[in-house]
Length: 296
Image 1 (cartoon, rainbow, N blue to C red):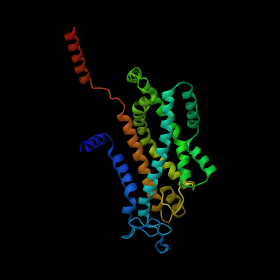
Image 2 (cartoon, rainbow, N blue to C red; image 1 turned 135 degrees about the vertical axis):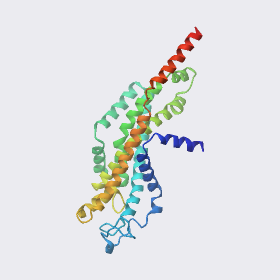
Image 3 (cartoon, rainbow, N blue to C red; image 1 turned 135 degrees about the horizontal axis):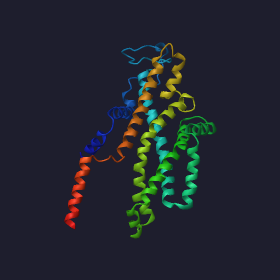
Image 4 (spheres, rainbow, N blue to C red; image 1 turned 90 degrees about the horizontal axis):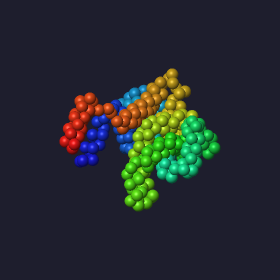
């Protein structure tokens, strides 16, 4: 009950449209296979390009597949792919960044120069290069995007780690004889992960968009697996005949990207200290003055 209240209090400061959009996306990604009205890959050429009906609420595509079922199933495809990319990228980035901030010296210089090289190259170009070397496929796409996204998390992790290592309580732990492993795993790593998760919330939108982009180009998720980018490229030849087949996956993808961007921006702004009102400052100065006179 206490955890639920804390979670609800944390959601109060977040924009409701973003919370609702991301909540629906996560729910469909987790429970999508259980709520789809039809098999998303079932083909019925006799029902191709049918409009909205009682059986097919959003119509069917050029192969007679139910559009609503494919939209819902695509949420799980994007959620799983996005989660894998972020987990791999954050694991590599946090490890390199925290080691650089913890060791300092030549270790930091070598690791951060490697990170600078990664940051200098556009993420989509890196992904395209990796796919060009290893070929198309689901896991190759995950590897390509993870290699493209880890430098950003490494840079943020290093900055947070340096700030933590310069705090007085870390110096106190060293004086008291705490081992480097205890300082790293008990104090440095948890603080760094908390800061990087804010970065991951904002980057989730870019990862989801990159997955759709690679699938749209034919380099990511391959048919017949339902995916929003794949649905767009399949429906493009029939744009004039059935424009809704292009509009619907585009709208869903746009809503998810905008929702993650708004959520990440709101979380980042909530972590920025807010200036106190003048009335509160005046009260605190009065209390400080009274305490100083009393102690004098």
